[in-house]
Image (cartoon, rainbow, N blue to C red; front, side, top):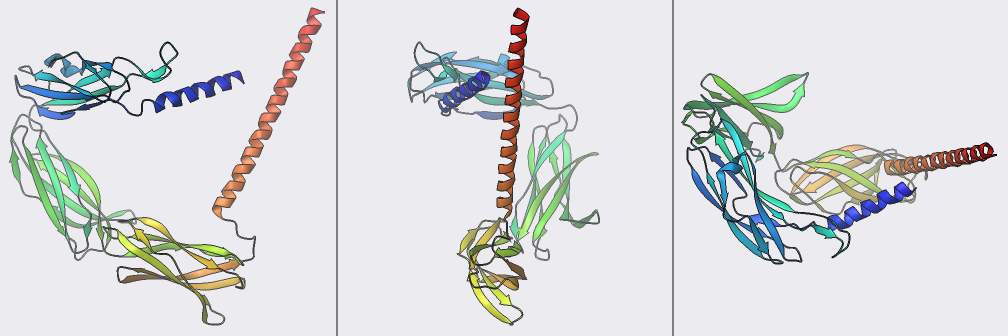
Length: 405
Protein backbone atom coordinates (compact mmCIF):
# COMPACT_ATOMS: atom_id res chain seq x y z
CA UNK A 1 0.00 0.00 0.00
CA UNK A 2 2.87 2.37 0.82
CA UNK A 3 4.35 1.73 -2.60
CA UNK A 4 1.03 2.61 -4.24
CA UNK A 5 0.80 5.87 -2.31
CA UNK A 6 4.41 6.72 -3.26
CA UNK A 7 3.70 6.08 -6.95
CA UNK A 8 0.58 8.23 -6.87
CA UNK A 9 2.48 11.02 -5.08
CA UNK A 10 5.29 10.92 -7.65
CA UNK A 11 2.77 10.92 -10.49
CA UNK A 12 1.03 14.00 -9.05
CA UNK A 13 4.39 15.75 -8.67
CA UNK A 14 5.13 14.94 -12.29
CA UNK A 15 1.84 16.51 -13.36
CA UNK A 16 2.62 19.65 -11.34
CA UNK A 17 6.08 19.86 -12.84
CA UNK A 18 4.79 19.29 -16.36
CA UNK A 19 2.18 22.00 -15.97
CA UNK A 20 5.00 24.45 -15.31
CA UNK A 21 6.96 23.61 -18.47
CA UNK A 22 4.22 23.63 -21.08
CA UNK A 23 5.25 27.16 -22.07
CA UNK A 24 8.82 26.69 -23.23
CA UNK A 25 11.58 28.88 -24.61
CA UNK A 26 11.76 29.48 -28.34
CA UNK A 27 14.37 30.14 -31.01
CA UNK A 28 13.69 32.22 -34.12
CA UNK A 29 15.66 32.39 -37.34
CA UNK A 30 16.55 29.69 -39.86
CA UNK A 31 15.39 26.88 -37.57
CA UNK A 32 15.60 24.44 -40.49
CA UNK A 33 17.95 24.73 -43.47
CA UNK A 34 19.08 22.32 -46.20
CA UNK A 35 22.26 23.00 -48.21
CA UNK A 36 24.06 21.18 -50.99
CA UNK A 37 27.76 20.88 -50.25
CA UNK A 38 30.10 23.41 -51.83
CA UNK A 39 33.82 23.32 -50.96
CA UNK A 40 34.67 26.14 -48.54
CA UNK A 41 31.06 27.46 -48.39
CA UNK A 42 30.55 30.08 -45.64
CA UNK A 43 27.08 30.99 -44.33
CA UNK A 44 26.09 33.04 -41.29
CA UNK A 45 22.89 32.37 -39.31
CA UNK A 46 21.34 34.89 -36.92
CA UNK A 47 19.13 33.52 -34.14
CA UNK A 48 16.90 35.08 -31.50
CA UNK A 49 16.29 33.23 -28.21
CA UNK A 50 12.95 34.04 -26.56
CA UNK A 51 12.13 33.13 -22.95
CA UNK A 52 8.77 33.26 -21.19
CA UNK A 53 9.89 32.23 -17.73
CA UNK A 54 9.02 34.37 -14.71
CA UNK A 55 12.67 34.86 -13.79
CA UNK A 56 15.88 36.11 -15.35
CA UNK A 57 17.92 33.21 -16.71
CA UNK A 58 21.12 32.41 -18.60
CA UNK A 59 20.78 30.34 -21.76
CA UNK A 60 23.79 28.29 -22.81
CA UNK A 61 24.44 28.26 -26.58
CA UNK A 62 25.82 24.91 -27.71
CA UNK A 63 26.49 22.92 -30.89
CA UNK A 64 25.65 19.30 -31.58
CA UNK A 65 26.00 16.87 -34.49
CA UNK A 66 28.79 16.16 -36.94
CA UNK A 67 28.62 19.68 -38.42
CA UNK A 68 29.38 21.25 -35.03
CA UNK A 69 33.13 21.26 -35.87
CA UNK A 70 32.42 23.63 -38.77
CA UNK A 71 30.41 26.22 -36.76
CA UNK A 72 31.65 29.30 -34.88
CA UNK A 73 29.38 30.98 -32.30
CA UNK A 74 29.34 34.71 -31.53
CA UNK A 75 28.25 33.92 -27.95
CA UNK A 76 28.31 30.85 -25.73
CA UNK A 77 25.52 32.12 -23.48
CA UNK A 78 22.87 34.86 -23.37
CA UNK A 79 21.13 36.34 -20.32
CA UNK A 80 17.40 36.92 -20.79
CA UNK A 81 14.94 38.72 -18.53
CA UNK A 82 11.29 37.54 -18.31
CA UNK A 83 9.45 37.88 -21.64
CA UNK A 84 12.53 39.30 -23.39
CA UNK A 85 14.88 37.99 -26.10
CA UNK A 86 18.57 37.96 -27.09
CA UNK A 87 20.42 37.50 -30.41
CA UNK A 88 23.50 35.53 -31.42
CA UNK A 89 25.07 34.32 -34.67
CA UNK A 90 26.37 30.92 -35.80
CA UNK A 91 28.76 30.91 -38.76
CA UNK A 92 29.14 27.75 -40.87
CA UNK A 93 32.39 27.19 -42.78
CA UNK A 94 32.47 23.97 -44.78
CA UNK A 95 35.70 22.06 -45.56
CA UNK A 96 37.02 21.33 -49.05
CA UNK A 97 35.67 17.75 -49.06
CA UNK A 98 32.90 15.79 -47.30
CA UNK A 99 31.73 12.20 -47.33
CA UNK A 100 28.67 11.65 -49.61
CA UNK A 101 25.29 11.79 -47.87
CA UNK A 102 23.52 13.91 -45.28
CA UNK A 103 25.43 15.70 -42.50
CA UNK A 104 23.51 17.35 -39.69
CA UNK A 105 24.26 20.06 -37.17
CA UNK A 106 22.18 21.51 -34.32
CA UNK A 107 22.48 25.01 -32.90
CA UNK A 108 20.81 24.90 -29.48
CA UNK A 109 19.88 27.22 -26.63
CA UNK A 110 19.71 25.46 -23.24
CA UNK A 111 18.32 27.00 -20.08
CA UNK A 112 20.90 27.10 -17.30
CA UNK A 113 18.32 26.44 -14.59
CA UNK A 114 15.30 24.19 -14.21
CA UNK A 115 11.63 25.11 -14.35
CA UNK A 116 9.06 23.22 -12.36
CA UNK A 117 7.57 22.77 -8.92
CA UNK A 118 9.19 23.90 -5.69
CA UNK A 119 10.72 27.16 -4.50
CA UNK A 120 14.00 28.62 -3.35
CA UNK A 121 15.77 26.33 -0.95
CA UNK A 122 13.13 23.62 -1.35
CA UNK A 123 12.73 20.50 -3.43
CA UNK A 124 12.21 21.10 -7.13
CA UNK A 125 10.99 18.78 -9.84
CA UNK A 126 11.43 20.35 -13.26
CA UNK A 127 13.35 20.38 -16.47
CA UNK A 128 15.85 22.46 -18.44
CA UNK A 129 14.30 23.49 -21.73
CA UNK A 130 16.44 23.07 -24.88
CA UNK A 131 15.45 24.48 -28.28
CA UNK A 132 17.46 23.79 -31.44
CA UNK A 133 17.81 24.84 -35.06
CA UNK A 134 18.71 22.06 -37.51
CA UNK A 135 21.05 22.59 -40.48
CA UNK A 136 21.57 19.77 -42.98
CA UNK A 137 24.32 19.66 -45.60
CA UNK A 138 24.05 17.09 -48.40
CA UNK A 139 27.20 15.96 -50.19
CA UNK A 140 26.30 14.40 -53.59
CA UNK A 141 26.73 10.68 -54.21
CA UNK A 142 29.16 9.56 -56.94
CA UNK A 143 27.46 8.95 -60.30
CA UNK A 144 23.75 9.43 -61.03
CA UNK A 145 21.35 9.61 -58.10
CA UNK A 146 17.84 11.11 -58.22
CA UNK A 147 14.91 11.33 -55.81
CA UNK A 148 11.47 12.91 -56.04
CA UNK A 149 8.31 13.77 -54.10
CA UNK A 150 4.87 13.31 -55.60
CA UNK A 151 1.70 15.35 -55.07
CA UNK A 152 -1.84 15.19 -56.45
CA UNK A 153 -4.89 17.08 -55.20
CA UNK A 154 -8.49 15.98 -54.81
CA UNK A 155 -10.62 17.43 -57.62
CA UNK A 156 -14.21 17.97 -58.68
CA UNK A 157 -15.51 15.56 -61.30
CA UNK A 158 -14.88 17.12 -64.70
CA UNK A 159 -11.84 19.10 -63.55
CA UNK A 160 -8.27 18.14 -64.47
CA UNK A 161 -6.26 16.34 -61.79
CA UNK A 162 -2.61 17.45 -62.01
CA UNK A 163 0.05 15.02 -60.77
CA UNK A 164 3.30 16.78 -59.85
CA UNK A 165 6.74 15.19 -59.47
CA UNK A 166 9.29 17.40 -57.68
CA UNK A 167 12.63 15.93 -58.80
CA UNK A 168 16.12 16.67 -57.42
CA UNK A 169 19.50 15.35 -58.55
CA UNK A 170 21.63 14.10 -55.63
CA UNK A 171 24.49 12.71 -57.74
CA UNK A 172 27.73 14.08 -59.10
CA UNK A 173 26.83 13.41 -62.77
CA UNK A 174 24.18 15.05 -64.97
CA UNK A 175 21.07 12.95 -65.55
CA UNK A 176 18.01 12.89 -67.85
CA UNK A 177 14.65 12.14 -66.19
CA UNK A 178 10.99 11.58 -67.10
CA UNK A 179 7.98 10.16 -65.25
CA UNK A 180 5.37 7.53 -66.13
CA UNK A 181 2.17 7.63 -64.04
CA UNK A 182 -0.33 4.76 -63.90
CA UNK A 183 -3.83 5.62 -62.65
CA UNK A 184 -5.81 2.86 -60.91
CA UNK A 185 -9.30 2.66 -59.47
CA UNK A 186 -8.81 2.07 -55.75
CA UNK A 187 -11.41 -0.75 -55.80
CA UNK A 188 -9.82 -4.19 -56.08
CA UNK A 189 -11.84 -6.97 -57.76
CA UNK A 190 -10.70 -10.59 -57.44
CA UNK A 191 -7.26 -9.35 -56.44
CA UNK A 192 -6.63 -7.70 -59.82
CA UNK A 193 -5.53 -4.11 -60.24
CA UNK A 194 -7.91 -2.02 -62.32
CA UNK A 195 -5.58 0.24 -64.33
CA UNK A 196 -7.44 3.04 -66.08
CA UNK A 197 -4.81 5.04 -67.96
CA UNK A 198 -1.07 5.68 -68.21
CA UNK A 199 0.24 9.26 -68.33
CA UNK A 200 3.73 10.47 -69.26
CA UNK A 201 5.50 13.64 -68.09
CA UNK A 202 7.89 15.81 -70.04
CA UNK A 203 11.62 14.95 -70.11
CA UNK A 204 14.23 17.10 -68.35
CA UNK A 205 18.01 17.17 -67.86
CA UNK A 206 19.44 17.85 -64.41
CA UNK A 207 22.91 18.85 -63.30
CA UNK A 208 24.29 18.38 -59.77
CA UNK A 209 21.89 19.65 -57.05
CA UNK A 210 19.40 20.87 -59.66
CA UNK A 211 15.62 20.64 -59.14
CA UNK A 212 12.83 20.36 -61.71
CA UNK A 213 9.05 19.90 -61.55
CA UNK A 214 7.52 17.33 -63.91
CA UNK A 215 3.77 17.00 -64.29
CA UNK A 216 0.97 15.14 -66.07
CA UNK A 217 -2.74 15.95 -66.33
CA UNK A 218 -5.67 13.54 -65.88
CA UNK A 219 -9.02 14.39 -67.49
CA UNK A 220 -11.71 13.26 -65.00
CA UNK A 221 -14.90 13.97 -66.98
CA UNK A 222 -15.43 10.28 -67.91
CA UNK A 223 -14.39 8.89 -64.49
CA UNK A 224 -16.71 8.01 -61.60
CA UNK A 225 -16.53 9.81 -58.28
CA UNK A 226 -14.48 8.01 -55.63
CA UNK A 227 -10.90 7.10 -54.69
CA UNK A 228 -8.08 6.55 -57.17
CA UNK A 229 -4.42 5.59 -56.88
CA UNK A 230 -1.62 7.22 -58.85
CA UNK A 231 1.62 5.23 -59.15
CA UNK A 232 4.49 7.37 -60.46
CA UNK A 233 7.71 5.82 -61.72
CA UNK A 234 10.62 8.18 -62.30
CA UNK A 235 13.11 6.97 -64.92
CA UNK A 236 16.65 8.38 -64.95
CA UNK A 237 18.86 6.80 -67.61
CA UNK A 238 18.90 3.05 -66.77
CA UNK A 239 17.50 3.48 -63.24
CA UNK A 240 14.04 4.02 -61.78
CA UNK A 241 12.22 4.76 -58.50
CA UNK A 242 8.48 4.77 -57.68
CA UNK A 243 5.94 6.37 -55.33
CA UNK A 244 2.15 6.12 -54.89
CA UNK A 245 -0.57 8.56 -53.79
CA UNK A 246 -4.31 8.24 -53.20
CA UNK A 247 -6.56 11.01 -54.52
CA UNK A 248 -10.30 11.54 -54.90
CA UNK A 249 -12.62 12.66 -57.65
CA UNK A 250 -15.67 14.27 -56.09
CA UNK A 251 -19.14 15.54 -56.92
CA UNK A 252 -21.76 17.35 -54.88
CA UNK A 253 -23.23 14.14 -53.55
CA UNK A 254 -23.94 12.55 -50.17
CA UNK A 255 -24.17 8.78 -49.92
CA UNK A 256 -26.36 7.01 -47.34
CA UNK A 257 -24.28 4.25 -45.76
CA UNK A 258 -26.50 2.96 -42.94
CA UNK A 259 -29.40 3.83 -40.64
CA UNK A 260 -31.08 2.74 -37.40
CA UNK A 261 -32.92 -0.59 -37.79
CA UNK A 262 -34.63 -0.95 -34.38
CA UNK A 263 -36.38 1.41 -31.95
CA UNK A 264 -38.45 0.95 -28.78
CA UNK A 265 -42.18 1.60 -28.45
CA UNK A 266 -43.65 4.46 -26.37
CA UNK A 267 -40.51 6.63 -26.22
CA UNK A 268 -38.50 9.25 -28.11
CA UNK A 269 -35.97 7.32 -30.21
CA UNK A 270 -32.95 8.70 -32.09
CA UNK A 271 -32.84 7.66 -35.76
CA UNK A 272 -29.23 7.79 -36.90
CA UNK A 273 -28.46 8.00 -40.61
CA UNK A 274 -24.77 7.44 -41.42
CA UNK A 275 -23.80 9.49 -44.47
CA UNK A 276 -20.62 10.23 -46.42
CA UNK A 277 -19.88 13.34 -48.43
CA UNK A 278 -18.36 12.82 -51.88
CA UNK A 279 -17.59 16.51 -52.33
CA UNK A 280 -14.29 18.40 -52.00
CA UNK A 281 -15.77 21.22 -49.90
CA UNK A 282 -18.20 21.70 -47.02
CA UNK A 283 -21.88 21.01 -47.76
CA UNK A 284 -24.02 23.35 -45.67
CA UNK A 285 -27.39 22.70 -44.01
CA UNK A 286 -28.00 19.13 -45.18
CA UNK A 287 -30.99 17.44 -43.54
CA UNK A 288 -32.92 14.16 -43.73
CA UNK A 289 -36.65 13.64 -44.30
CA UNK A 290 -37.87 10.20 -43.20
CA UNK A 291 -41.25 8.66 -44.09
CA UNK A 292 -42.37 5.77 -41.87
CA UNK A 293 -44.79 3.58 -43.83
CA UNK A 294 -47.27 0.98 -42.52
CA UNK A 295 -47.28 -1.47 -45.43
CA UNK A 296 -50.34 -3.38 -44.10
CA UNK A 297 -52.43 -0.20 -44.27
CA UNK A 298 -50.46 1.24 -47.20
CA UNK A 299 -50.05 4.66 -45.64
CA UNK A 300 -47.41 6.97 -44.22
CA UNK A 301 -47.90 7.03 -40.45
CA UNK A 302 -45.38 9.82 -39.80
CA UNK A 303 -42.76 12.00 -41.47
CA UNK A 304 -39.67 12.98 -39.45
CA UNK A 305 -37.20 15.73 -40.32
CA UNK A 306 -33.71 16.05 -38.85
CA UNK A 307 -32.18 19.41 -37.91
CA UNK A 308 -29.91 20.86 -40.67
CA UNK A 309 -26.20 20.15 -40.31
CA UNK A 310 -22.96 20.95 -42.16
CA UNK A 311 -20.87 18.10 -43.59
CA UNK A 312 -17.16 18.66 -44.17
CA UNK A 313 -15.33 17.57 -47.34
CA UNK A 314 -15.32 13.77 -47.61
CA UNK A 315 -16.67 13.51 -44.05
CA UNK A 316 -18.57 10.50 -42.71
CA UNK A 317 -21.04 11.41 -39.94
CA UNK A 318 -24.43 10.65 -38.43
CA UNK A 319 -27.46 12.81 -39.20
CA UNK A 320 -29.87 12.33 -36.29
CA UNK A 321 -33.66 12.68 -36.28
CA UNK A 322 -36.02 11.73 -33.44
CA UNK A 323 -39.15 9.54 -33.64
CA UNK A 324 -41.71 9.55 -30.82
CA UNK A 325 -43.22 6.07 -31.03
CA UNK A 326 -45.92 6.73 -28.41
CA UNK A 327 -49.06 5.03 -29.68
CA UNK A 328 -47.23 3.21 -32.50
CA UNK A 329 -47.89 -0.53 -32.62
CA UNK A 330 -45.04 -3.01 -32.37
CA UNK A 331 -43.94 -4.48 -35.66
CA UNK A 332 -41.97 -3.84 -38.82
CA UNK A 333 -42.33 -0.70 -40.93
CA UNK A 334 -40.88 0.58 -44.20
CA UNK A 335 -38.60 3.62 -44.24
CA UNK A 336 -38.08 6.05 -47.09
CA UNK A 337 -35.09 8.31 -46.35
CA UNK A 338 -34.38 11.42 -48.41
CA UNK A 339 -31.33 13.65 -47.88
CA UNK A 340 -31.71 17.28 -48.97
CA UNK A 341 -28.60 19.37 -49.77
CA UNK A 342 -27.49 22.02 -52.29
CA UNK A 343 -30.72 21.65 -54.34
CA UNK A 344 -30.01 17.92 -54.65
CA UNK A 345 -31.38 14.77 -52.99
CA UNK A 346 -30.21 11.24 -52.21
CA UNK A 347 -32.73 8.54 -51.30
CA UNK A 348 -32.65 5.14 -49.64
CA UNK A 349 -35.30 2.65 -48.51
CA UNK A 350 -35.28 0.01 -45.80
CA UNK A 351 -37.03 -1.60 -42.84
CA UNK A 352 -37.27 -0.61 -39.19
CA UNK A 353 -38.69 -2.58 -36.24
CA UNK A 354 -40.59 -1.13 -33.30
CA UNK A 355 -39.83 -3.40 -30.33
CA UNK A 356 -41.56 -3.78 -26.97
CA UNK A 357 -40.23 -1.48 -24.24
CA UNK A 358 -37.12 -2.88 -22.55
CA UNK A 359 -36.28 -5.28 -25.39
CA UNK A 360 -33.81 -2.99 -27.14
CA UNK A 361 -30.36 -2.59 -25.64
CA UNK A 362 -28.00 -0.23 -27.34
CA UNK A 363 -24.36 -1.21 -27.87
CA UNK A 364 -23.28 1.50 -25.42
CA UNK A 365 -25.63 0.05 -22.76
CA UNK A 366 -24.29 -3.47 -23.32
CA UNK A 367 -20.69 -2.22 -23.06
CA UNK A 368 -21.53 -0.29 -19.87
CA UNK A 369 -23.06 -3.39 -18.29
CA UNK A 370 -20.04 -5.48 -19.31
CA UNK A 371 -17.68 -2.87 -17.84
CA UNK A 372 -19.57 -2.84 -14.54
CA UNK A 373 -19.43 -6.65 -14.35
CA UNK A 374 -15.67 -6.61 -15.04
CA UNK A 375 -15.11 -4.00 -12.32
CA UNK A 376 -17.13 -6.01 -9.80
CA UNK A 377 -15.18 -9.19 -10.63
CA UNK A 378 -11.91 -7.28 -10.31
CA UNK A 379 -12.90 -5.90 -6.88
CA UNK A 380 -13.93 -9.37 -5.67
CA UNK A 381 -10.65 -10.88 -6.86
CA UNK A 382 -8.64 -8.12 -5.15
CA UNK A 383 -10.58 -8.56 -1.90
CA UNK A 384 -9.95 -12.29 -2.00
CA UNK A 385 -6.22 -11.78 -2.61
CA UNK A 386 -6.00 -9.29 0.27
CA UNK A 387 -7.81 -11.71 2.57
CA UNK A 388 -5.36 -14.47 1.63
CA UNK A 389 -2.42 -12.13 2.24
CA UNK A 390 -3.74 -11.22 5.68
CA UNK A 391 -4.28 -14.89 6.55
CA UNK A 392 -0.78 -15.70 5.34
CA UNK A 393 0.66 -12.88 7.46
CA UNK A 394 -1.21 -14.14 10.54
CA UNK A 395 0.08 -17.68 9.99
CA UNK A 396 3.67 -16.42 9.70
CA UNK A 397 3.27 -14.43 12.93
CA UNK A 398 1.86 -17.49 14.76
CA UNK A 399 4.73 -19.65 13.51
CA UNK A 400 7.31 -17.14 14.74
CA UNK A 401 5.66 -17.00 18.18
CA UNK A 402 5.70 -20.82 18.48
CA UNK A 403 9.40 -20.91 17.56
CA UNK A 404 10.23 -18.33 20.27
CA UNK A 405 8.44 -20.53 22.86
